[in-house]
Image (cartoon, rainbow, N blue to C red; front, side):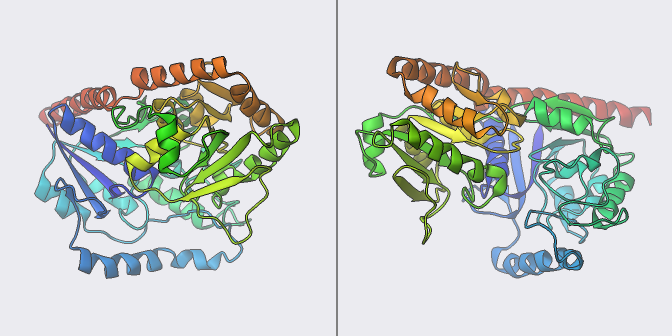
Length: 423
């Protein structure tokens, strides 16, 4: 079985890292797996990308033209919104590779035109990394549920017109994918449920397979050693928060984290706790988090992440909407309990008061309470750490994920081949 993954890039960002992990996991169980990407950051020979020098100019130009229709919405929110209206060169590249099955991943950023999906002749499996597949262009819907109908009057575009850009994108998807035979995979039950409620995917087959990770790399490291590496204090309880654009992406919940930490600092623990942030550098005017704060900057490797998780006593993931939440599963694999809101994909990762704490959705008071609950009892903290690692080993290994996908791939290949015989 030859598997081809289509992804905008290979390791730049959470969705890309998830796709690349699956790619390597399939190789580890003996399957032939390749990736076709728009932009390549790794040195992996099984990741295929266009000529780098030529690509750089073309990619920048495509992104510029991709965003042109958005210029008509000058008041729109500063959130990712992709139209995918420009033609691409994917079909001949796929034909040259000639895989048995195609696994689509995050294919935005002008990588893959909406109409290209139907031009691919192989059986298709699409791993949903966010909500773009069933919306009119946004990746995180917030409180909007217009994807359940046909989009239009898009809040993120600050549009009050039914026939706006989001409606046009939705209509293109509806037309192009009407007769498309595709199986969807969601990393969480929450995202699967949301996708089933959408007008575009309500009649599609949707399977749930959690994202996997290498639990041999992501494992508990001696805390003293991990703190030495990052020059962190040995005599404090350390609270960790991190994500790509950790402090600037509103979906990551920094605006909720700040008041929660300030509230926690009023409980008499101010001198015993310090905060650690990765995914952001120290700003000129750092926000007041109530505790001394260490900024570790950006990480691009597993070792730095593993030591950061291991250095901490608790990981905080205050996201508003997460399709899964890989920082949470990575932290658990390193034996670090997680505090998050009892909402979206994080509910599949964290077991309340067993390997972390699930606060009432978006209640700052309960989030602060959860942090205190994790930290206040050393014996409890050790148990939480044990069950955190146990959950990762039981449910989030690459091998388990790879076997689940392998079985699904073989099934859709068989169905596809039978349909060819019958026609």
